[in-house]
Length: 162
Length: 213
Image 1 (cartoon, rainbow over the protein chains, first blue to last red):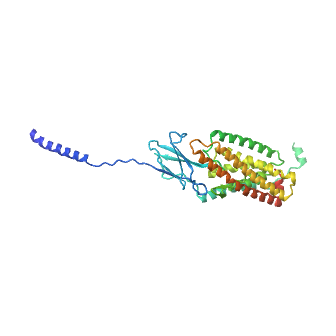
Image 2 (cartoon, rainbow over the protein chains, first blue to last red):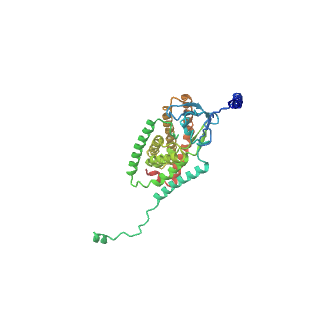
Image 3 (cartoon, each protein chain N blue to C red):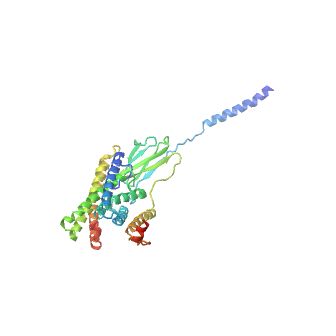
């Protein structure tokens, strides 16, 4: 009885062993994502900040530059942030005292694109609102003092009440 | 010209706020000493809006471009109102368009506002020759407009050159700062001409606007 059982058990073991060796010949594909961040720096006029100096600050040390570089002719610059440092990466682009800082979240809450300014329509609308505010202020202070709706009480009346 | 956030060290930003506070105090005191302190507000408010919009007008000066500032014009026409006007204009530029910045508001206001007061004194010098003469009004208007902008550009240059962080390519940055400052020379002529035209116009249509302040 016992021997009868041993045969299929051995066969099973053999089959498993063969498949295990077959797995050892298989290919395995591992992956790591190397994120590349591309930034583009332009002036308000739309002109690129060609040759602008780029400073990248890692989230763990916002005061020491992690990487420095220079924008190309189109104001573009690419870098690969260290995936082991999730958080907000700060990238500053500067040329002749002009420039901007962009905050790029890496890891959680990552966005595919970010930064950028307002559209021309938004700018015109916002500018118009502020100008209207200034014009309103000017009109308010330029108005002639309106005649008092109630006439001043007569001298005698004021003396009596006092 | 408008220095944005993150360019200057914190000590410079703090010093900028200190000088702006002092200049605002002096200006408001002088305004308060006038017979009617509110009389100049409509004019100041309108010129603040002109100042606010002017920075969108770019003048291409190869290889870079500069924008109008009009601080000399504000100084010549507004007198002591010019400083608060510039401060308010800069505040709105920083808040609405990130043009300049809130940490550098003090530095920028000093950089443009103090030369504006200088322009005011230059323009007032025309009283020494002949206040009614249109030619002298134009000449002093031109000098006031040009000098106001030129001094502001020089202050900006000195501030930027002396505070370049060591991790940058200092030579390249310095060269581009010089290029930008040089670009303000043609702009000085433009603003000088513009200021001369405005003061001539005011002298013809409403000369009392130039008398006060």
